[in-house]
Image (cartoon, rainbow, N blue to C red; front, side, top):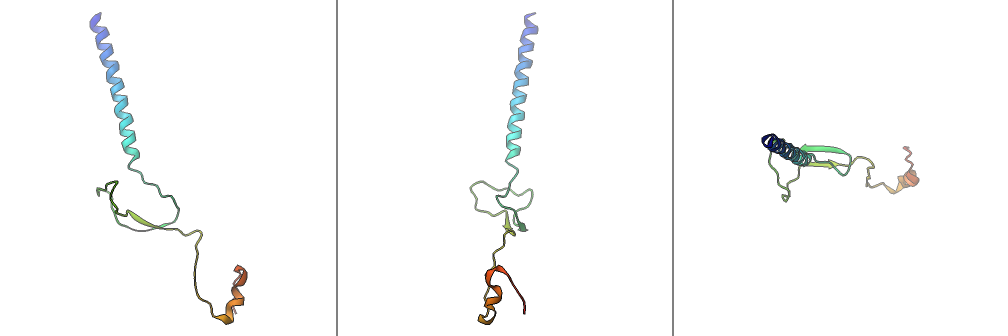
Length: 92
C-alpha cells in the first residue's frame, strides 16, 4: 500500500513538472511574435526566418511606413497658392 501511495506522489509530481514545462514553453513561444506599434506597409525584410537576433542588438528587422495619415510637404508657385488654401485643391 505504501508503494502505491509513493507511486501516486511521484506521478502527481511528474504532472506538476510537465505543467510547468508547458507554461515555460508557452512563455518562450510568446517571445517569437513581434507586433508593430503602428499600422502601415513594410519595406524589404532585413532579417529572415531562421536568423538569430539578440534583444540588445540594433539590427532592424523591417522598415514600416505609416500610410494613414500621410503628410506631404511641397512647394506651390505663388500664382496657384489661393487654389490650395483651406485643404481644398482645385486644378485650373
